[in-house]
Length: 462
Ligand code: HEC
Ligand code: HEC
Image (cartoon, rainbow, N blue to C red):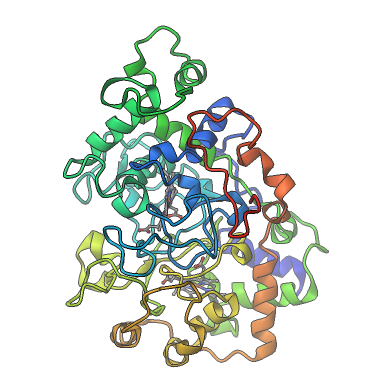
């Protein structure tokens, strides 16, 4: 296909030449973003001081954790990330495997999302405005408020709204004893007190050093500490950091901007398949993977095998009803958000529950979900203790609802699609030196004694 024709088709799919235009992008040079980075990396935001945001969203692991399903609190070694991270035996909620029921999505390029966050979209712009990342007069809905209403505490962006929630989840960060039985705001308030070393959180940190930084970056030099180190500011700073994680400089982006030589021949053929509708002989991927992040930010039933401990849905509690958990609509049952595909080569495992470790297997699942489910036994994740019992029965009943008819692609075409997906990688995300500004320097002073300086199972720094 002629390169100009392909480019026109890409633009038709809503991929802009300049995806960042008008968006609330931040710079990692911004002191608020740097404060946010250090908050993102502190285990002091975990109730039991053992889990940070970066535990599951480390830049050196593609903005995720490289696990099918996360282990948040009560890890055997809290600072070990990636394959080899294990849960400690015999703690609440432990069943031998990972305690978090969904795969951790990347935080990279979050600024390109406008409508929803989470696999079920439970953080959502009530009226999405293109390019606004949730900002707008109508506000943002969160799990703290009824469906269809705005959360007055959400802040200005989807990122700031989201950052209020992981600290309230027992399995992710909170633990099972911290403010047990109390509501989400009590948890946040206590954590803010801990960081600011005041009120109920006084004397909880061995070396509290946050207050003066909050004062400087938010320009609150004289206010009482309760108005300075607040959870609203914590969420705002973390959001600013996340909105600085722009990793877009891929061969695909250079092609979109007009560089005819940016893509290999295989990647060009793959792009053509990706952006050409099935009715015109293509693979129709852009029916759902469209727009600046290659997601329609809508929900579809793909019947990715349901593994893990589930979200407590269905008779056995091991199902995850997906979008229907939010809307209560039967038609949304088992539907999950179309994920972004930017940097997809480094963001595995794939699917809402990390069912596929292998990118090719994930792509092939789309071509014939029933056949893929029948053969899934060969692709079970390698993560120790992962709950795979009963996946077949659970997934069979979901297959009936899949709306993707089978598509016949030969092996060369699948290889071309994979070459295209590889071309969505910004080389920075595979280059530790390039990522350094987004990871706290282990030689810099630790802001509270609980900084996560992550290591792999062999003890090498990430
Ligand atoms: C124990 C692992 C874990 C920790 C710790 C954690 N997350 Fe996550 N994160 C997840 C999982 C799992 C999801 C998806 C949950 C879902 O869809 O229900 C997620 C989703 C997200 C998303 C939405 C991304 C998207 O594309 O929808 C953002 C943003 C995010 N987390 C940021 C954070 C921040 C900020 C913190 C710290 C305050 C944090 N996370 C702590 C596991 C974790
Ligand atoms: C009907 C909408 C739809 C179409 C068409 C579609 N996808 Fe998807 N895709 C999804 C949804 C929804 C998911 C997430 C499923 C889940 O989480 O269980 C997904 C997941 C993926 C993932 C995993 C990403 C991750 O981070 O987990 C890849 C890779 C992918 N799709 C590639 C493709 C390719 C290549 C095509 C074309 C052959 C395609 N998709 C066509 C909706 C679609």
